[in-house]
Image (tube, rainbow, N blue to C red; front, side):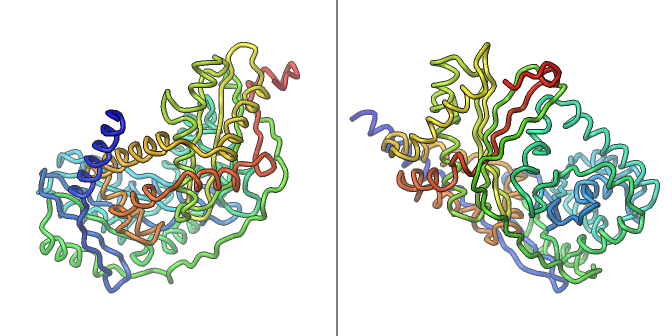
Length: 447
């Protein structure tokens, strides 16, 4: 009884905390199509200015992979009014920080400044949108930077092909451009003409393909005026890019693949499934399933395979939902003479349990408490709030998910978990990947 009372009290406190920290925001469109989201929080003298463009690796044409990620680097080179190589100097000299990142679906740039430098952040991002300088010296410089990044993160990094999906997505997707890696092909970048980079910028880096988010210690009325001054005059260089979702044929039989990596000593067994996109309710259920299987030391796979049977050095299970589709990845590293088939057998046993047995009330309540805690933490920083606002608008079509997404998780039932496990996590619908040290190829050892 005391334990139940504690769980009820914890759930109530989390619920009160979530209501108290609701994120207020205002959103509107400029005449040129730029979507603007403003969030005022005067609790600390900090402001984040971010621009997310609806351009990712999935939008690249055949033979020119890597352009979206390349632009993440290229557009820090400079603008007509920011001298080449001075972007980071300006930010740091004004007490700020900045970064950018690219996914299959979008590219996001942001600056974090003391709030008295808000106008500087708005100006810099407007410069990136309106006056980028794209020339040969910049392309050549960033070409070498991207090549070095690929060497460090993928080519020479243990399990890099798994972490960055270059050894996974190409087997799961046949038609959709998700089959290509975000970092792309160095050969494609080398072969591209300068005019192609200029055309790419004109096609995608337009206000009607972007969302501007300003979050932190701001005055809404003053910020609106600055936004209009800096972004209102920017014209679109092209019609808004219209996507057609590419439908993949269902996977109906196992895809058995062996990959080799000269950077590893311990093999990996990976089971990978194609799953629905991030707006589908089932993708949220898969997040629950991941936590059941490997969400901490009390999770099912960790307790069974790492603690009790001591057959795995590490286990993992996570859902990677994207705009059109997702992937669900399970994996384990063996200990001693344990084979990769042994690992697959034990992982499959836990999947079958989820498909045939309802989880307990206690396990479901624990899941809901964990996700409510994660939800609170995700909105604990201004930078995190800015990113969530932009992403929810651009990729999920509802900015207010920042406040109500937790309700989707709260509504998930034990029956939902069983249904989703049955629907997506089947042996005939997956990639079965043996990821082996290069030395295994030499001796012909497939386990």
